[in-house]
Image (cartoon, rainbow, N blue to C red; front, side, top):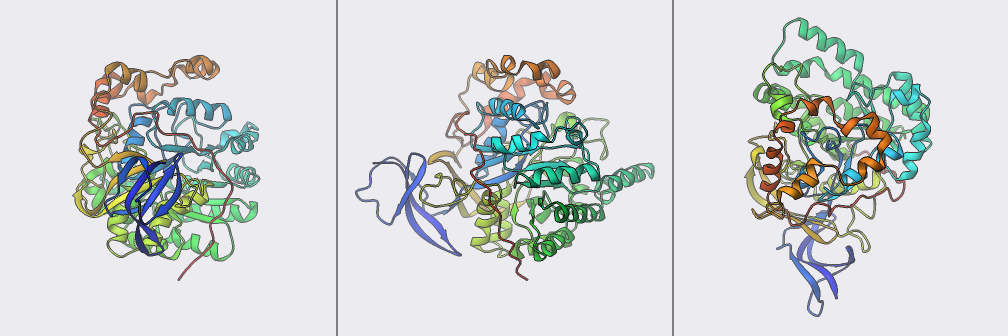
Length: 532
């Protein structure tokens, strides 16, 4: 007796596929069989011959429930992940109150996220310039021992609780993280250049959308990546360039790999499909991100980077802001609106449609960049990102032929906007399976629709019972863990908007709290393979 059989699954074998039936026991893959006669199971999930790949991973999300619940709580964020075929997210340490830089702060974040999660999740660790200045670098090894997958460093300012690093502070952080064997991810923009040219453009009176991208120019990313590579070479650290936006960045990473350095990179769907002239002219602040959108040439050079191996995998930098108070509020402009966009819900279909279905990448590359490589890089493999016997039974089931149009008003993400709005795609997630359980199906019915006012109040408007007492020292320093942005937000005054949105999320088959926290399983490095 098996717990689940995934029937008629078309699974990858290299660049080919084969139809099989996947056997699931105790939430793990127990085997594969051509014939299910004589195999009994408590539940049958029919993949209907659709492409079934190892559960996809978004290794760069900012679900800001802790401190910024008006932007995206962990329930709506993981619902968006499930709707987008993402079975595991890896959340960043920076956009929370307080930011996550100690084991106690990691445990607080886990206790807050656990009741809301709909898919599995892991955590990045944190290290800042403040940690260097105050002699707190011992927290790096402690976080590594706890099970974080990597460490994040900002070369430009993030939120007040996560100070950026100066150049020597970054080098000290590199040395500390190198001792753990884990990657250190940098937001690669030169602060001085960005700061100077943003102020210059403001003084010149530039108020158009594209001005944001032109001020934070390609050169700012290029020199930041070059500095990071130099620091990696000097320290022995595993450098990872997060949300890399430029074609020259891909070339620099490729050259570093050829020299034998442990340098990796990720791109995002928006850097592969959008250009700043068109998107920022059309969407303005709703296309404002950092690093900014680039050119059509960068789009194509990044696709080349994926093909040749200088870009290792895809993530999203999912960081949505509240539309009413932080993007389109009267008085805001392209310089003062907050920089961030959603992405976890559209990552898989965009890469399937614009990459695989258009012949830019092979099937094996699709699996690598959406699942396997991130899993290996962050030490979750083979628990995640694999179709091995004993791996978690995580699957993303894709209808390769379904045509549809991205509409932010229909998405699970709470923000209600995306610069991908109106993009016509071929290929859509049909079902998402996490540990053998059907978490999402492309239907209107949802397990969230019947949640009561009390359930929603306890889940998204109040912290879990006992948390404030358990972490009294943190709550004393950060009352209610509220940010200044939340205090002046639209949803603080209108919590019913959150309730209505949650009840309107479609296709969810499990209740909040199903998702589980996953610690790093091991330390792995990706092969430095460059194909020109």
